[in-house]
Each structure stands twice: as structure tokens, then as C-alpha cells.
Length: 235
Image (cartoon, rainbow, N blue to C red; front, top):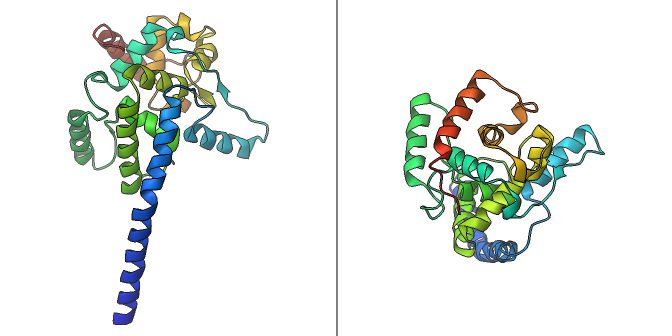
């Protein structure tokens, strides 16, 4: 028994040493990617690639709908709606909204399950760009490091531009341009306030809703977002 315990400790120590040696190189690679993406548009994201793999399990010919558009060609209404819905303090924090995180923890404890996240736009972008969908403390740690890197390397305007271009807005639908055309038949620049609020409202569960769907929950959520949009500050 003692021999097995020693062996287990040796393995654990070896793994920790290996991680300590490898992680700086991994983080350097992540940061190099982020520096590149501060000036150049990514072709895809880790999350998009996972979704495409899942779609192709059902249909080998499946493709994603995605078209990059620069920040100036996204409706101001959508920018306001997304910030109002997802991250009201986007311009004020440095990647983490600690008050929102604390409220999410308290809400989850009351419910006895995970019903709230408290993630900022920067955190969501970090997950979309790089990470797997698994939930673990290691992944949350990676997310925190990547979020700090994004905030250090990019201006808020660029972070929001990337988020708007790679957020999921339906089955195989990614980015504001594809979302606007899929759900409303207009460009991202032409979205009005109600359309923008609808797109922001479905962000937590974008594959749940058909084109332009309306439910009592969505109507209430849209009304809340519309009220908050007036006060939303955008970069």
C-alpha cells in the first residue's frame, strides 16, 4: 500500500512539473495568437470548429454560415443591445465583473445548480476563440488567463468587434452579419432596435429559437434589453 501511495505521489509530482514546464510555452502561443488577432480577423474559432464537427456527424456536407464584417458595419443598436444584455460594465472592467460573478455564485447556491454564469464579453470571447466546452477548474483557469491576455492586448472596440463576429446566433449561424440575414433578411448594419434586442435576448441559448421566434419569456427579455439599451455605453 505504501509503495502504491509513493508511486501515485511520484506520478502526481511528475504531472505538475510537466505542466509547469509546458504552460509558459502554451500561454506564449496563445498570446502570440491574440496579438495577431488584434490586427487580423480569425478565419474561425475553436467553438465554431466544434459546432461544425457536430453538424457534420449528421450531415457530412454541413457548413457554417459566417461572414466577417468590420465594426463600423454592425448596427449601433446591436452593439448597445449586446452590452445591455451580456455585460453592462464592459467599458469599466478589465475583463471580470466581480460583482456579477458574486451574484451568480449566490444565485447558483440558492438554486442548488448552475443557473447563472456572470461571464463578461471578454470571458465569452476567450472561450469561443480557444477553449473546449468542458466545465472544469482547469478550463476556468485557462479562461481567466486568456481573458487577461485579451484585455491587455486589445482595445475594447476590438474585443467587441470579435465577439459580434463570432457569437453563435442559431444552428450553424455565427456572427452578426449571418445572424441578421438568417433571422431578419437584412444586413448587420440595418438591424433596428427591436431586431437587435431579439438577437441579444437569444444569446444564452441561440439554437433553441427558430427564425424570429417569439415567446412570453423572449418578449419580456426583449423589453428589458430595450430599456437598458438607452444607457448602454459602447466603444
